[in-house]
Image (cartoon, rainbow, N blue to C red; front, side, top):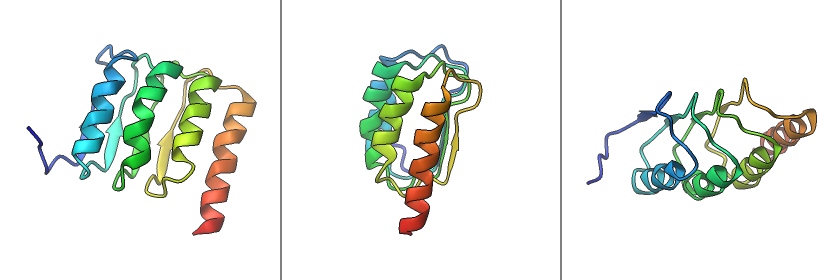
Length: 119
């Protein structure tokens, strides 16, 4: 069943793990109307970001992605960086309270600068 009017999907604090990201990715692929995805306070590692990246990279309307306190590390951020490199719909990205090094933060920042200069 596709809920075509769903604009915001907030799955914060649901004890979601990497395997759950397969389902979230499918939701993003089947419901292109989602504008805000909130996955705060869940456990998403690099494998979870790989699963999620398919839906994120093909989502044309997703404007806000919140991954606050998801235990993301540099490897997961690099996967996120790769999948968002050509996604121009995301305007707000929240990565606070994760385990991201300065290098990981620079990758995301450089990606945002590159996207801004190409628009």
